[in-house]
Amino acid sequence: MKRIRFKVAAAAVAVLLLLGPSAPAMAEPTTPLTYGAGTTATRYTGLAFDTCTAPTVAQMTAWKGSPYKAIGIYVGGVNRSCAQPQLTQSWVGSVTRIGWRLIPIYLGYQAPCTFRPNAVKITPASAAAQGTLLAGDAVTKARAIGLLAGSAIYADMEHYNTADATCRATVLRFLSSWTKELHRRGFLSGVYAHQDSGARHLAEVYNSTAYARPDAVWIARWDGSSSLTGWPLISNRYWLIGQRAKQYRGDHTETYGGVTLNIDNDSFDAPVASVWYSYTVRTTIHTYSGPGTSYPIRGTIPLNSGVRIVCQTFGPKIGVTTVWDKLIDGTYITDYYARTPTKPGYSAPIPGCSNPFQTTVDNLSRRHGPGTSYTTYPGLLPIGSLAWITCQRPGSKVGTTSVWNRLSDGSYVTDYYVATTSNTTYSTPLRRC
Image 1: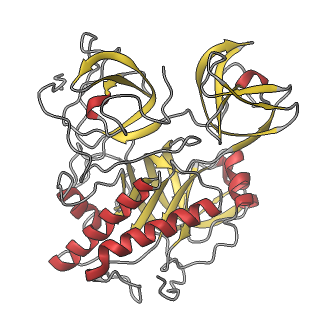
Image 2 (image 1 turned 180 degrees about the vertical axis):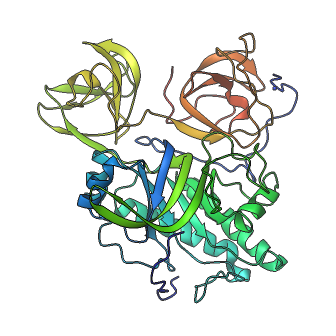
């Protein structure tokens, strides 16, 4: 991870569907995750970079011609090494409006056996409590600059001594509590770690009931390869569905648009930050509880008023478009009357609406419709995969529920084996298909 002028701040506080097994309890390694009404997760696939101090808006604008479309930003942490004068709501709004995705990084307490000099370290006896505390602080810091629930925040755990068993257990307890607290607050849990230490140890306990499993891992392995598979020490079946990132090259400079930055190179297919996008409406319109006029009216927005859109989804056609916009309060408006840039389709950089949850059983089938009679898609979902859910609908009963989840690729999985908030009925805030 990018380190320049390291300085420690003062320490602060199935093709089988597997119908036989009972639904797993919502405990480690898969822990409850509840999203708020006006939330979505954002998945980024492509190249990214990280740098110690967030660049200015002018520098980010100059770098729009680069191969990178996402940037790692240090939102907080007692071991954060560089000042961040740019990290404000205004900066976030400006750079995301021109298309950048943001990858929040939190540089908190480090392993007791870390190789990082002068780092503030985890206290072994307090590892769980400190993981919870720092996750709460990370959420506070993220919200302060305009990042929404549904965002992923990556705990930065620098390289440490793998021969120290006590240290390993301390790190795992800390990161488990980090994950559980982020989930409790409606955020996705990510971990940035060295392939040979933190990432290796997380993989070793991937299915352990002693530790909560993070939703995504971002490994450091400076081998020049951007591949997100074939990692030594980590099975390709772990963190498979939009859950992987790799830092494949360290400190060096690159120049785009006449601006030179010192960066690390990253490859991503993983959740990143979610933000709102500000637009205005071109007539007086209603807001609805769901994406369509058949849903109850929740309010009225006057002509030329601003709206904060978090994501876009599909619904009944209005005018020339079937696109509906989800607002930050969880209500919906037709995109036809919003001054978004694209009609009749979706408008970049607004993401499609989806809320991911981990799967709780191995080799889960994806089907072409909401039921076991539909044909299957190639490939089965390993346990712990993220089911990126766009909506829910009724289908054939599996276990205790007839709810099926439509995923972002158009396939369906039974909700019985996904860690949503209910094993019997629909889960808030997921919309109906």
